[in-house]
Length: 486
Image 1 (tube, one colour):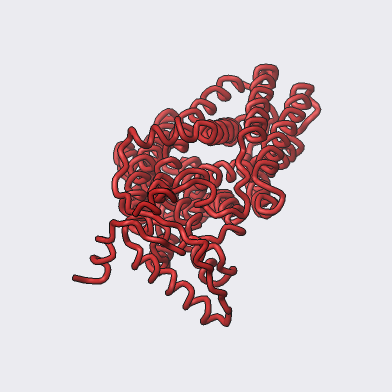
Image 2 (image 1 turned 135 degrees about the vertical axis):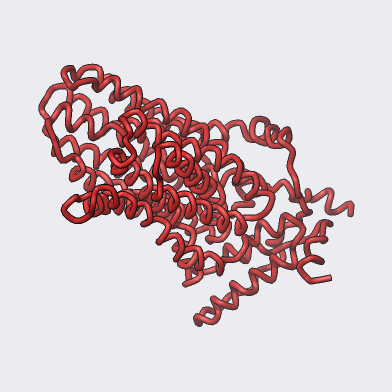
């Protein structure tokens, strides 16, 4: 019998120092490899959204506006299905298996979509690409939080989620190049654009092979020997860089027993009986940020065109994307130092207030396209950090064994509510003759974000610099009285 199989059969209670050993590690090249290998998911998602939104395929596939819109909807539906399906598998089968599988599914879906010869063919493989990216959201957030030391976890998770906008900017830039008929034939340029993501993904999938399985996941699934060996290897790599690691006191150990399959009734009990305030917090944060982002992001071009007469709206997207990218990078460290509750409240409320001010000025007719974009940049500088914190919050305040699943549930609900926003705000924009309906819509969006911030102020969890196991006991944790009885 192999050592791995023997470890897998270790179902009895066992004391483990794995969490304490992982959290006491300094920042090293190993952690950079985790960021690069796993963090690319958000770049790919931003890239995909921009390439699809540009609709370079519309003429080649003879699609009308409704069919083009459906291509985006199919991708988002694929994300929801992928998150729900692969989120449960990531908790059951492990993080590494899933973050390899989901990236491979995305590569196949996006690449084959570039070969589309009919709308129905495009829809199928846009859905497949969405499946992969949705699965990434669940598996990757879990893996990052479990591999990154607690004192860095907040800023790293927020910064990685914020790189979505780096991908979006890359996609917008690629569209200027590949969709330029002076450079590429209009029937071929968009096809090449669809291969940008897969090319990046192929390079990253080899890097992911060297990222280990989460030792925390192994620890809670009866594979303690494998978990210890994984941490030993990580420490060996770090010590090879000249770092001296201190021993971890045995008092920091946690006693766990294997938990393989968790019924949905148990999941419901944990979420709605054990942690009702936390699931309320997670849902509120995810719904509010999703609604606001989809409301503005999917209609900004209509606003610039219908109210300001802008023809080249793509150029205005770059400062909008950069503001969203810089926010998490600039503010991320404050989530670890000043605190989660304070920063979530600040980012949500400030973004709502800035949007409210811009709504008033918009209704007064004193803004031009440039100043409208400036206000969006400022509002989403804060909102982007807050939106990234929504994923961080959900991924760290629930038991380890449910982490991927809870992310998928909350993500799915947020996407469903967010999907309403583009249609609603599109109706409010109309033909651009009356500003008042959109003014009310902007005020409503601002109020929704402020409500999210207020909820975080009351229900937020002070998770900064704390071990995941201190924030929520693993379901596999053996209580002290039970351990003593044994």
